[in-house]
Image (cartoon, rainbow, N blue to C red):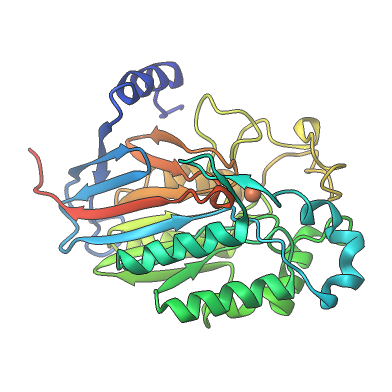
Length: 343
Ligand SMILES: [Fe+2]
C-alpha cells in the first residue's frame, strides 16, 4: 500500500506556499515509552522555512537549540602527498575551483566559503555544526587537515557524515563499501572524533541527531538496526545523511531509495569511474530503511545535501530539507524549538 502523499498535490501546495517565502506544515512528533508496542499518543508539531532559515517545532522538545547544516563544500586543496593519486583525483580537483556566492553572486571558492560559514557558526553560537558530506572532492590529506584545524580552532561542536566524493578516488578498483572503509580509515577518521563512521548519535539539548552514512546509495543492515534503536528510544530525532531519501515525484538521481534506481538508470558511472549501480536495484534493507524513516513517529526532520540545490519535501508529514552546496557559501540555519501540543 502506498502511504505517501500525492506528489502533484504536495508540490503544488509547496509552490503556492513558497511564493510567500515561508512554508509551514504539520509533522508528526511522538514518543515510545518502551519501544513501539506502547507508543504514546502522537503529538503534532510543525515546521517552517524561510530562505535558508528552517525551524522545527515539537512538544517533545524541551529547550531551544540551533544548528547549522553544511554540505558539499568540495574542498580540493592538495599538496605533494596527493601527487601519487592524481590519476584518481584529477577531475574532481578541478570541479569547483571557482564558485559564486549563493546570495551575493560574488566570486568565491570552497575554502573561503567554508571559513566564512564556520565563522558565522562561531559568531551565532550554534549548538552543532553538522556536516552532511562532500565536504571534500576526494580524500585529500591536505584538505582534511586544513578543515580539521579550522574546526578545532573555532571551538564549535561539530559532527560529520561522509558523502560519495569524500572517500572516492575515481577509477580506483574495488567494491564501494570496501573503498569507503579503506579511505575512511586512512584519511577521514579524525573527523568522526572517536565516533563510528557509518552511524552515530549526537545528543544536543535533549534532541538526538542521528548521522547515517548512505554515501554508497545503500543502507547496511547494521545501520537499519541502529536507526530502529534510535526510534525505539522515544527521543526527538533529527536525521542527517548525505544523499536525501527518495520523495514521490523526484527523479532517480535525487535520492536514495527510488524504486527505479539500478543499472538501467545509472547515467554517471563512466564519468565518475565507479562500479555501475546493481542490476537488481536497491537492497531490501535500503528500501525498508526509507519506509521506516518516513514512518518514524519521533523523527522531526531529515537534513541532507548531494543535489547541490536547496529543496524541501514532506513525506508523511516529515520534512526532508536539502541544503544548497557550501562551495557557494550556502548553508542552513536550523532551530529546533519547543511547541505546545495541539489538539
Ligand atoms: Fe557534492
